[in-house]
Image (cartoon, rainbow, N blue to C red):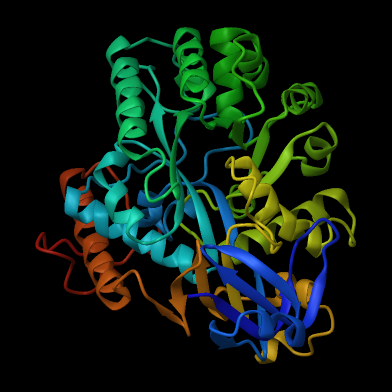
Length: 473
């Protein structure tokens, strides 16, 4: 059955940034069949389900082109434990490891991340992870559009930013390549094409030249999207210079890894020449604005765009809130440019929608146009912080909240409606995830007395989980 949302405001994010008032949008067979004045569209679909859109804003759903669903377990912890931005650099992105999770615990944590994504208006997600096969089915069941990028690396010891040289572990590379191929064989094109599979090289300082060449060849053979953490922290830059004698982007360029189907995440610690190299390749950049702000770093987005990069948005770690990401991206770039007018809210929305879909290889999504995929969201405009509504796109970008999103549709299917998520048991997921996090962090600190909990860390007066570990107030 067709669906028609009537008497609404449509922010289309089409090439002209058209906004339609008192308008209707018709969805049929998973795609947008018509949009325009309600009195024109409605008669064309006499048998459609009619949805009252009065007081609502309809717009494309958001594409999160860089996230790690399992790292939601570090929410409230890693945001304040960033590595140094000045020498001496230390390895790793936080001084604490994430706690080990059982398979069932991991599934629940990933559902929690998907729940937050849906509630903030996300319709498409690029998940960069390891052993995705173990939780792919659970996330596929949420109805989100998904690009699974299984990760490979072959540095035997250490993590991103470690300065201790590079020892190759061929077994790591082999297992990573095998995981990618198996995931692609199982999931690429699943759910009528809603799920696709790409490859992820962890980072330039985690991958040898041989592995990067293999991954690039595999990308060509599979015809898929690739992603990589690039110029993420200054420790990474120092590590690559020490081992390869090149800057990270130069290192990837030397090996032919840069290409037009690559999403480079972060790009915060780049020279202008690296930005030119990346732009020349036609790669996309995942501007992970919220985590960038928390880490005290930001990429030069205007320069990357001018050099030819497609700018899209990602949430990265600890959060899936794309409303926060859009606004933070706008603010960060205005502060960096010393410009109170640019980028515009419409520009930031384009990063989050059309550009994100394009970066993920989905040319027929990301905007409200006839023939495009029906991936859209509805926002309740009748709220104090969104009133008066004189420029709806600007008002939402500047003042909107994730809680304003009341409906989410992917491929013409409602995943959330009237504020209720339909594909995830929300109450159960939230309760279970809290209990899992308490148990997991308690296990970690009980087994590692050398680790110091961060300031303010508190699992309650009675401890947490079965371990009975309590952190004093």
